Image (tube, rainbow over all chains, first blue to last red; front, side, top):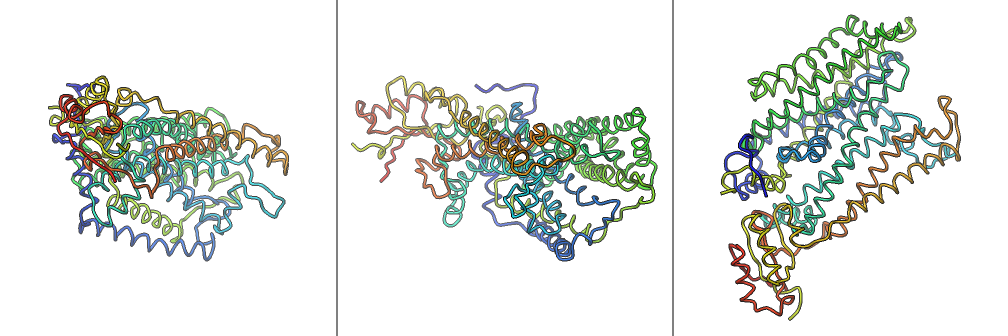
Length: 454
Length: 176
């Protein structure tokens, strides 16, 4: 029995029937691409092509093309890596954690958010792979493969190796979780189609027939995958933070890093989900499915995680002072007042102050304000990683080797490449895959739609 | 009459009507072949009398396999095959092996369970499903009854039971 609340807003507005859900989502896949889609796709593909020049230069000439020097040996690459991985976290949070908490509003956004996760992790993986310099040999350095050096194995004591396992497991489990959810929807499209489309979506749907027994197993698989993905997503950014926290660099060597990184990841991820969703709902006319309630709830998650991040910044500062360790204290004073002060204060403004604006109901229910702030948050989170990484390295223990980091044009180009890759993949997904999980939306429709309830 | 060829289909619009209908049809002695729904209907497996899925057990066993393999691999490589002192740690630095062990546990549990799910539900790209009614992936719930399985009852009687249980349409479907 479905129970309807008289207090809560309906999840799907506009009095949709089951058939309306099928039609509204499938027509994006079945129709011809619009001019707007072509323009967006070509822009993304163009960015990808321009960025490819920088990627080629990196592989051809070597890492010397980047702005790194012997003091700052890690800068844009790892900043972008952590930034992209962080963005991915919101997708898993929405599809797995909200499933475990039985939050029904996740149903209309989980598909696109998970797609975002997968594409963001692909973009993230570009950076460590390129930083290997000779990526074609990378498998020997990253995976425990037998080799002719002994075998001399990879170092299982190193957080960098843990990262290899964490990111690849995260990527493959997310991909499977996403695909299992897509199968019933591909079957819906298959049963509406004729000709070539029927063949393609028929293969993609793996012969799904919607039998009650298969649904029972599907539900069981979804629940267990959600249960596995929840600790997995927390472990991924925890391990990413270990890359820094297990070192002895002032500003990195702190135990607060794992929870602080996970909160930051969810914070930036939800901002990216909002950026993408606000555009998608508008372009595909899905305002009845991704409603103001969804946007408001996501903004509330941003307030919470943004506040956790803010408290973490202040805690770090306090502990640096309280520890009495001079190098640690200097690292933090240097962040706020040193040559990179502008990066530090951009981070503080974008991440600590801007999300607090969402306490005002008018702002968190305004599309324009949400869109603008979602971009501000992601700029802030990029600066957070830049500040942590570069300011901690550029003035190390030996003042004679203090240096500055300036990105080269290749650094910028590689970053641009990942943007192109991300949006190219997202636009292809939005055109050829159902952007909303039709089956799951239908399963919550009865408690929310007037027309179906009767 | 040959089994698995000729079916009577009850078409239902509403999930709650369907749930009642399944109990009614079963108590009246008709054996249901399967129910096809466009989305997961909660409680349907209970009224159909299906046993709980054992997939979580498969996931647990694959997870255990992952844990064992990961720990064995790391201990063999770091402690026995090529021991090296790294950061002054013990060769068998078990706490350092936990992250990779956790990841491989999750990886094997997820892939193993999904693999078993695919095999047990016959999901594969080249599968040719038998579709009773194209609307069963859109907005209709389809109850399929194998005539050969219900020879003790007249076809007209079964159709009558389906009608009175709330089916909006009662159709026949035959497969070659």
